[in-house]
Amino acid sequence: MSARNAQGAADGGETGSISADGARAGFTSASANLVTGDTNATADAFARTTSTQSTVRLSQLADGTQALLGWETTGISGNGGRGVYTGQGRFALTDANNADDVYATELTPVDSAGPAV
Image (cartoon, rainbow, N blue to C red; front, side, top):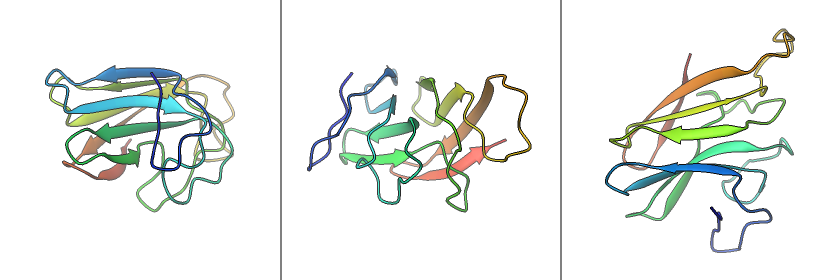
């Protein structure tokens, strides 16, 4: 899977899935130019809505906090309403167990509300 925006992504997508109706795709990418404000220099989880050509970052908190480490796997539910991502990415320095964490984000048609932990 390759992720591109109008400027062209710096890196291709690493893992991905597509909703049952094909309306939304989830993927992991280290590209820093897929969404505004991506400055953590690590792989993030994204969802792309095909009808609007919009991409949102799943792997951030509702307040915009970015992960400290990267994400490995991204999935989209069959109906496209939820994005799930796993990996050793973390949102707090206190998460030092070196184990993969799993997060789920509820999605609106073109937006992300941040992980529901």
